[in-house]
Length: 377
Image 1: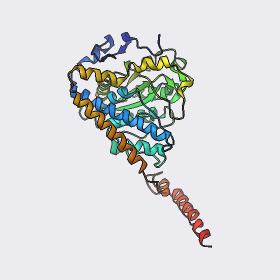
Image 2: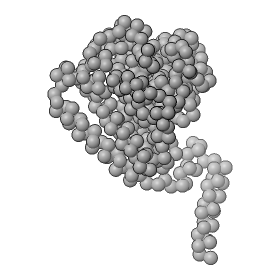
Image 3: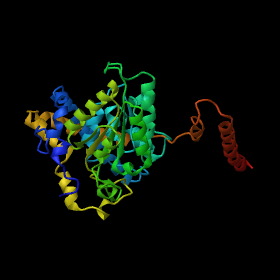
Image 4: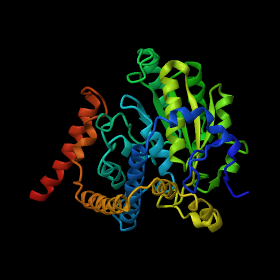
């Protein structure tokens, strides 16, 4: 069996790699939700997936040209991210790790903010209030699952969930990778989320490689089964199927905001590129494995579906041009990013003024002034 080959009997598949809607047996509970979607949603998803891939490739080029300190590619994971992101509601809170550029895009995040972070000209990246509750990136592996669990517990304690009004009730979703499941933080988050019936969806993007360690080494048991071990639904989806990602995530977010507690979704996908631009995946995986997943490209299968539905060629041509313009705009604005004011580091450690921080700020100003004194001496 090829690494990560899907087992359809226990995996939710709706859209096949050939672009046909052929639901697997595991998809049955989600078909009612799928019926509420139309091709306008899938056109929107296709557009966002295409633009994000153009961004991803442009950002990789910028790093190779020395314009970014680092970049974290997401190519291959667009369906998992776009589908789940489009399934959220505006009031929901989203907790990413550091590769969820596409999820942020569905929430209106200006992706140049991601590159500002990786260019080193911002301390955090963005104000979540400006990106529909899409929180800042977290580089400490797995720790965001605890943040999300605590926040979701607060949503429940505040009475923001379980009222029966799905249009207003809140839920949270947290993204993490297969490598993070080896961290204690994730297990602790699962325990607390289940114990308090928090309105939270754990969304695991299993892209098969925790840097150079294959998922088979991390866990000989399919990761979605961990959900049942903690007393919550555990579902595996074809992570390259945007329809499955949208339907399953939306179903369980609605269940969470209805008061039914947390769920655990494993999206089986593949990281086509490097873990980061500091990595060389040719050292630890084969061309055959990469080709297997290239043949299951998430954008290609949605492209095939839309064309089979009669989508006009002008749609694809126009979108290709938009993607080129989008990438060029990202490059231009990234290169124009200003260097930050050094005093920003003292501005936000605490919500209110703090004597120690003020003393550090004054010490820094004195240090800077000392160079002026030397220059005029």
